Length: 96
Image: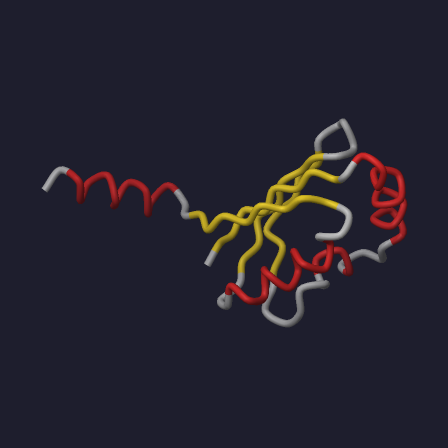
């Protein structure tokens, strides 16, 4: 399953979160949710406080653990998402 994670860092943690992220070794930034979590892509707002990431995992608990790990310093919303083909199939089914 694909999950979209949108975050907004609490203002008082903006600098410390950015510094912690900058120090993470390559690959570690996607690995704090346990086995089975794969980062598809991540984009950060230029404000240093907001961003969105797409993760793939089979168990929703995995993405929940990843989100909870950061929840003391930011607000995180996780939404299951699908790609274009799935949405097209849903749209086609509505016309039946």
